[in-house]
Amino acid sequence: MDLKLFYPPTNAPLSEQRIYKVSFSCQARADLGGGQAANLFIRQDATSSHFIVINDKLAATDANGNATFPTSGVAFLPVFAITKGVVKIDNRTGCLATQYLTGGPDLYLQAYANYSTQNQPGVLLSLGYAIAGLIPPLWAMFNGNLSGPTKDQLTAFGNTEDPLKKTLLALNTEENYPVSINLRPGDYEVRTAFSSVKIKVTYVPSIIKNGGDTAMKFFRKQIDTSLQKIDSNNLAQCTDLATDLLALGFSKEDDIPYALAYKGIRSKLTAAQASQCLGKDYAVAAASIKQGLWEFASRRDQILSVEQAKAEHSAVPLEVPYQPEYDDTRMKRFTDALSRLTRVDTMAASDQVAFSKTLREPVSLDDQSVVKFFGGDPKDYPGPALAAYFIEKGYRRFGCYQSTNLGQKLDGGKTLLFAFKADKDDASLGIENVALLKPIFTETGALSKLIAYDDFDWINAAMTSRSWMCGRISIKKPASPEPAVAKPLVSQNQ
Image (cartoon, rainbow, N blue to C red; front, side, top):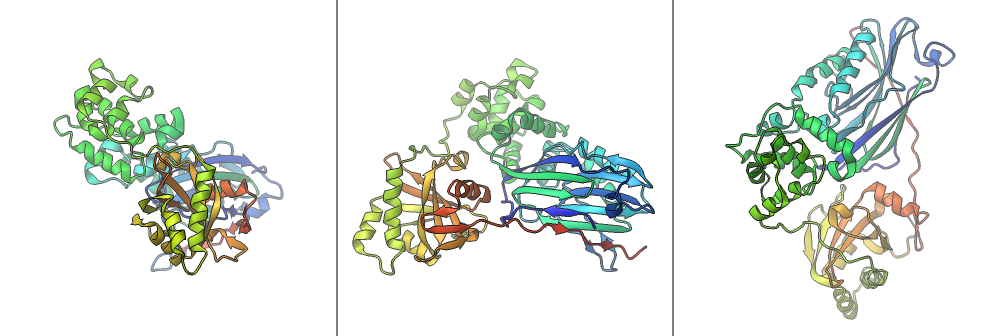
């Protein structure tokens, strides 16, 4: 079967409560009408079709041994279909639009070759493609992920769910040859003799700030799918809306203020009512948005000014702390002091004192890594206890500190520090033994917090610039895995 799926070398899953952008690009590789390539994929006695689905379930068989195709598609791209030499659908140059989704470990990229003597793809796949075209790019984030009180305020996904489900159900008959892989950050390619579909999955800290005008338009389109309005006599429901948006991964600094304010505009709230809906957490941020929001207000009394928002709500401290600029000398002092403690069996009292002088104790270790390098929860430590904890977890070596803007919108940090799960004499390590630390400093330069991450894109960017070397440690660059190949999934009812 000529259907292959090339996927990224990292096994890091998509993090929960984070937004990911899924971009598609398509290319034709051979003529669908004939040639030697046709013998590898297309059958003359059946409708031959190829499609790609992002799903939260894998293909399986039921209790009776019948093949079951998951019907809860998050994204659906029919690539091509042909019957008896007649091309019924060809989307190799008309790819699916960019989609956004909320991360989690149970999402799969699935590519299918389907052979059917019952279904006509000109109807089924065209319907699916039309539905996919009508679904807003943020639809997958909202579909089924909202609580009862808020789902009707933010989406009308029920209008699109059934046709898409019926389309996928119809493809359950006869022969399916699937190839599946857990969705993770990175680059993919689904390749046949006729087509190449490249898919890129990237983390997006904020739809509004990082997605530009196009993503802002997507956000409005998503909210506009709902005809429900915020009840001006029950503005407490705005808190429920904000809670659900936060759970989906939208940022508190930009996305949630924008969504609540735009929903308020569509609900004909006055500026005073919008201010109450937004509350002290979001009012000033929403009022400060200069374009793409308040021009949609149909009346002047709907526009919330920054002055009004500030007058009605006391200033809320920013969660992202101010950080002094990167200082190489400060990082060398800290890293050397920590290493003197972690690379020995018995800590000297003088070294413990020297390390504490680089800190504002207690130091918070906030583990944001998906794999939970350090337990997954924030915890405070005195200096020597922090070093002892690193030793307990096997992290004895630290280095390759550098200036960075990676994750700066998340935590404000301007410095990267690598932590290595290694003994003092190890010369090479796998990437799974590498943790990223973002040091957070006080205004006087004392370290007050370490945030741990395992984002492969960040590690890859930093290590590539260092040729995958850190001092005397060689980091094993992940090799590109062999492509996954389609296997048959055949119904017993043939």
